[in-house]
Amino acid sequence: MTTAEQPIIQLKNVTFSDGDLTIINDITGSFPEGRITTLVGPSGAGKTTLFRLLNRLISPDTGEIVIKGKRIEEYNPIELRRKVGLALQSATMINGTVFKNLSLPLTLQGEELPEEEANELLEDVALGKDFLHRNIKDLSGGQKQKVSIARTLVNKPKVLLLDEITSSLDRVSQQDIEELIQKINQKYGTTIIWITHNLEQALSIGDYTWVMMAGELIESGESNLLNEPKDERVKRFVRGDME
Amino acid sequence: MSYLTLALSLVFVLIPIILSKTLNLGLEKDTVIATVRSIIQLLVVGYVLQFVFDAENFIYIILMVILMIFAATQNARKKGVSIKGITWKLITTYIVVEVLTQGILLGFGITPATAQYIIPISGMMIGNSMVLSILFLNRFTAEVESNQDKTELILSLGGTPKQAIHKQLITSIQASTIPTIESQKTIGLVQLPGMMSGQIIAGADPVQAVQFQLLILFLLLTAAVVTSVLLGFLSYPTLFNDKMQMVKIVEDE
Ligand SMILES: Nc1ncnc2c1ncn2[C@@H]1O[C@H](COP(=O)(O)OP(=O)(O)OP(=O)(O)O)[C@@H](O)[C@H]1O
Ligand SMILES: [Mg+2]
Image 1 (cartoon, each protein chain N blue to C red):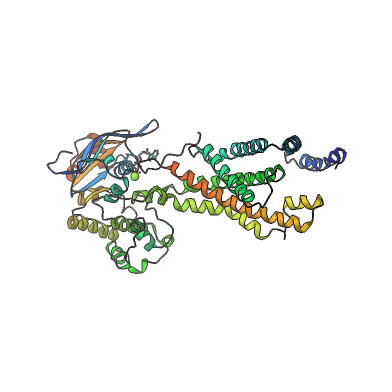
Image 2 (image 1 turned 90 degrees about the vertical axis):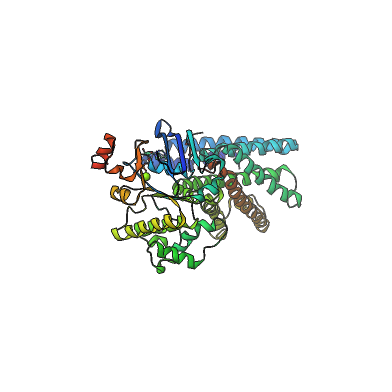
């Protein structure tokens, strides 16, 4: 991406494959610090895989990922994963209550999340306080997504990787979450990278947008590129001929 | 018992074969194989034991134990091919179980240091340890497989590999040791343990047979828990690499 802004994450010729299958194909690009970048592309484009690379759950076969000027390998994996927080597409939960899930990032460090803070977090993601001691099994898919976002925030990450976190939410909840993320972005200067299948959302909340297809970064720039894409494939994708 | 009466006992092999044939159960071939194998294996063991007992040489005892560990490893390793270096982890586990149980028995003079005691008890310990390691590996690989998403969640939030696998490890240790513990609760009520039955049939004093059986039960308890815990803690690190990433499980070594 060519912008004058300071990049917090840079990728240089990053490639990742699984056996013979190339999942991420020679991606070079960057994410500007303190901004919201939305990431769109058809299913199977490699968006989630890119997030797993950035959270270092996997490592590239070739190429380099640079975070705040330092190669990703130079960070302690634990520190890095706390700084570059990931909200998984699947909103995976551990067994137990909502509170147990919210505390998880802290219990992993041998600390306890104060109940007040947990309640504030629930309020932030528009879930009532009475959810705190409910069993996670009794929550709907959308409610779990909310818990998942709140849980990722507990580590106070510098970069937030959000993988389709509003996909099973109603319009109102979706707006609540969008506002929350924008607030976090503005208040703490947190860099947001947000995968979404909703192009309207990608345009409205993004400062910048990446369009990925078949493991490649096809187009990137300010989000209004979605209004006038240059690449033929992106044009077709935006018109809805692909997905 | 003479070889003639032993030959008569083959009647008990004919019954399942006839049943299998008439009901089309398809068990004939395996029944025959099992019968032939058990005859050959046990007779060989009998003669080998007689030789070792007569020789009164410690080297033979150690050779027997090594053989047992080798056989147990061969059997159990198939269940853990997805775990790197499983062969050595199993061998280590069996050696620890053997040294620990014999160490206590011989060290405190609970049993005399003769082949008559060491070999059968070692056989029971290693055999039990083998069953336990198979139970553990079955459960552990299944738990790891079905909870990959949770493991990855914990890693993604900045947990250590040990934290990420802890739940699966504990569940598998519990699940594999529970049968041993549970079966001890009803022992004697439902069935008499095989060794005790054997001793009583051979004419031993029932109370003495019970005392000995109790000793074995407690040893089995130790063997069970030590096997699962040790194998668990030896195995889980191989599921991760030095970057604290989950290693893709490969199905063949
Ligand atoms: N762990 C994995 N092992 C092997 N292949 C994988 C793995 N994860 C993803 N893939 C493959 O990589 C490709 C990209 O998957 P990815 O999940 O990154 O796509 P995506 O852009 O997030 O799609 P979606 O929009 O459906 O979430 C797919 O072909 C997928 O089958
Ligand atoms: Mg995805």
